[in-house]
Amino acid sequence: MNIANKLRYWRTYRRTVSELQGMTDRQLSDLGIGRSEINRIARQAAAA
Image (cartoon, rainbow, N blue to C red; front, side, top):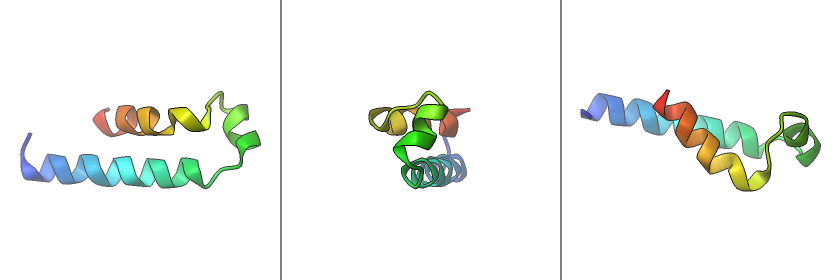
């Protein structure tokens, strides 16, 4: 993985974490996501 891809991965990861952490527990629940899953989901989103 080159530096450009690493930066793209990191930006996507941070943006996803930020957006999910900004949601209420109810909003996350509606999406079928628990707070403990945010980092895993963000890693998956960044890797896609």
